[in-house]
Amino acid sequence: MQDKIYLENVSKVFPGEREIEALSNVSFSVKENEFLCVLGPSGCGKTTLLNIIAGLETATSGKILVDGKEVSKPGADRGVIFQSYALFPWKTVLGNIEFGPKLRGVSKKERRELAMKYIKSMGLSGFENAYPKELSGGMKQRVAIARVYINDPTVMLMDEPFANLDAQTRSIMQEELIDIWRKFRKTVFFVTHNIEEAVYLADRIVIMTCRPGKVKEIVDVKSLLPSNRYSTEGKLSAEFIGLARKVWDSIKEEIKTI
Image (cartoon, rainbow, N blue to C red; front, side, top):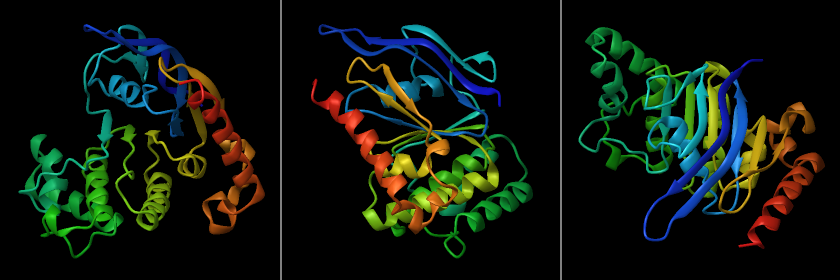
């Protein structure tokens, strides 16, 4: 499987009166159609790394390639989903999801058909004319995910998208995200603080050190857990719980050094 995202010695320093070194010589790759999660202590540069891949920030040094091309700015090949939903409050569910194709000049008929396809896929049927203020947190995030997917990026960059949800809704959204990922097969770069979430979702987990963020280790979840890990039984299995504990122990070592 070929590399979709490739990072080589990526470092980031925020200048100022008190210079902050956020990332130091980060190197790893993400395979095509892989679901990769990034975990680490608060302030280790996870979101900064995602923003650099998105082209929203520039690395101080190092190289970032997507499909073999160096990243220098945002691009349609990379869709970003934020923790804060970032929906237009004055637009309906349909209007929010149609926004990208409308900007690209897609005809009204075609973009409406596309939007309805994703509304159905995300379980939003019947809410086409609802405004964000009328939706639950989980529904808002479904709209945010649909709004990115409709633009057909090859890479999904997700920055703690479920952090604002209650535990039950978060669990449901994790299941729905896996279903969507299996259906549409995108490369996913997913930042989270939640260890169980990472073990549940990821093919591999990149564990970062405390600041400046470096790659401490990469855990190959796919090879360590049984194929039923997406089920309730899988999440309660000794293998799942043991791997989550191992990941926590690795992160706890870093937290103790802060």
